[in-house]
Length: 294
Image 1: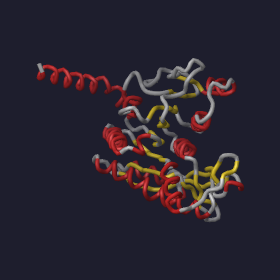
Image 2: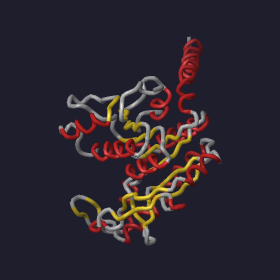
Image 3: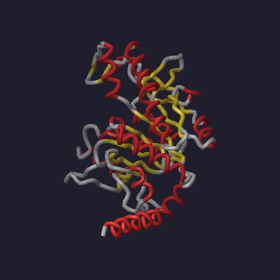
Image 4: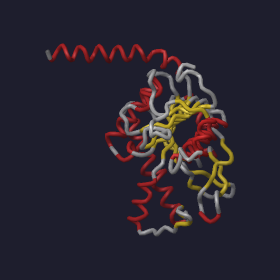
């Protein structure tokens, strides 16, 4: 009986792989930018699963780009080092001392942990920040917030070099100022700017929620840009989901084919979204063709 059950499992696995073929063909050669945050970053098991999915994506011809955050790790390090933070209107003021810690944590601890996880799964990942090769030039977002930046100019040529070398770039959301400053950039904002700069086929925003929900609390799987605006005006989209959907709209306006907001806690979330009919989370685009093959 046990052997029969195992055989059924293997047959189901083979069938799943066979059904994934048209989606693998669809995304071969495509650039997919993934914003990593939430559960997968805090859990060793989640990080291992994510890294395996990224390597598999590359093996079937996708060009993955990983952009990560690191807010909880930054908070922990600031506390450990005794660096006190000032807040204005609920936002952290990033002074020089705070910026030094932010760069250390993002470019060092967090970035290299992701790189190592991908490399352990057989991939070839390289960690950089938006400062490297002038990938992301920023303007100061608000003088009252200190070294917080908004991307103003992108140069994605270094990423094209990575694609040609079959290398997975892992990018910390730091940008260079025009006068040599270092700016901290919101992870979602950085991912959206990078996705637009490389005209990505997909931007996947991994979060700790299952997607964009309607007034009844149900996840909406397919949404147009106009519907996002209507839901925001009506107050259906609120709180922390607003900056994510704003990032999605800006990325689409910048040339990204579609943006997906999905639950990074779900096992194999990226693979489910790209390589199955059902997909995962909420896909946002300017119009409404068929979910994947359109």
